[in-house]
Image (cartoon, rainbow, N blue to C red; front, side):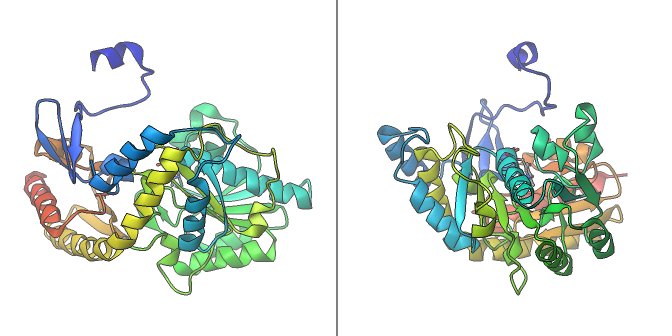
Length: 390
Ligand SMILES: Cc1ncc(COP(=O)(O)O)c(C=O)c1O
């Protein structure tokens, strides 16, 4: 901690906890204190910690090939892209290293698609309260002033509209619109799902004006909602043109992807985009392992997620300061009428890691291997802390 204070950019406000190792749904401090991990590296450690299947793949692949750049082929980009096509219903993948990088690629596709049609077709519609990452492009479509203010002016041509307001969306989209960007469940914005009708309208408007519909599923995708992607939750499935995913995809190794249909993919030709690290053999092999594991875990995510919602709602009914429990599967937010930060700090002292987003929303993103027993354990801690709230 002292070294970080002296040698790191002071951009993070960390909790005073060092995590030395993890196993399953638990992490341990260097002195051996155990914590139930219900934030999982902000939705990254989907298979928990030290999963035997992931360890085996990492050990084997690290001894064979970690990286060879995109000058050459490795053996795992093709199979992983095929698997992503199967689970997403889209066709072509670009491999990046983070959620923000995936969104940069999506934005470049949107811009290139628009520009190929008309030099004035560069507008992007994004939502109030959204979060798409910290790079300048991703920040430009992030609808929260607190992230943007210090870096203005950002990309021109971005229009923000309130989520789930169909009339506002209709008023904003037009001939100059090149893309509409949606988080199917806003994560940093407080775990706020979009309605099926709203997404259907966005699809319809994108088609009418030949704009690309982008689903940012960096936080809400890859199994967390109990389906591979949140856009598959309600039927009929409304396919985006471009999907961005990242966090849980390679079990903690940095990997972000854009998966696009042929129309969107056609916007990017040879030389227009790239990455030195993106799609490394190690990350891609691990991601294949993660996707196989998720296929087996989806019923459990639905079952345990459903149970978690029920017990959180029971707790909510006992405390008038709890306003709402929201989310799907294992992406759950509990909105309070009071700031959530102290509860997060107190939960840590009780051996439970959660976090608070949007000031008043307790956010739970447990690993997909979580059981009802661990949910009970977490809710017991919350019940104890809630009882003390004045
Ligand atoms: C919806 C969404 N998009 C993009 C990002 C940015 O991802 P990263 O932090 O990997 O760049 C995040 C991160 O929280 C996110 O929640």
